[in-house]
Image 1: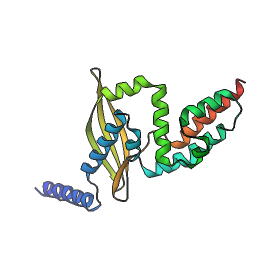
Image 2: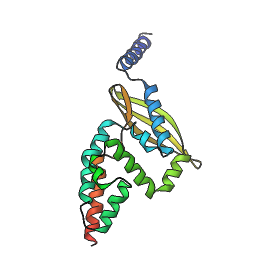
Image 3: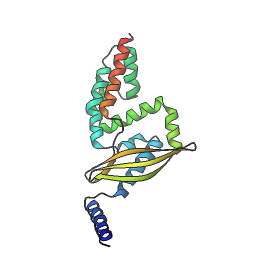
Image 4: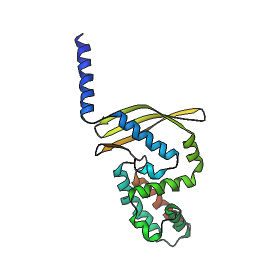
Length: 191
């Protein structure tokens, strides 16, 4: 009886602390589902509003300078890569882009080269299996993705800023910047 009472008190205390800290799995689930609904519709501008602000700031700080340097290269392959990324954004406006703008461009860039991935994502069914609160500002969402009769599990990390939960980018902006650097280096080697 004493063990059961102790367990019950610990459960209540844990729930109380989580609620007091503002850790509401409902908010996490809502924002997670909104993010993926936007991505699967190809509405990357809305999806960008649900991406963690720190990740968006890092996109601007780490990826944008690499792309701006790449735009100065004489190599036609490097220029084509930069122009494909920026799309219709005029050259003189590129350095002024915000983190959300860059996220949107990046998602469009990836989508342009992997249309089949976007189509598969649009058809996939996602269901949240579990939300694990790591602390008051970080959570892991484990979810099932079912497509074409096959189901796999995946995880995404969520971060809380100013009372709102955001999806963390899976690929760190520094890694994206390195991929662009490598592509530019490869283009220069092939010259």
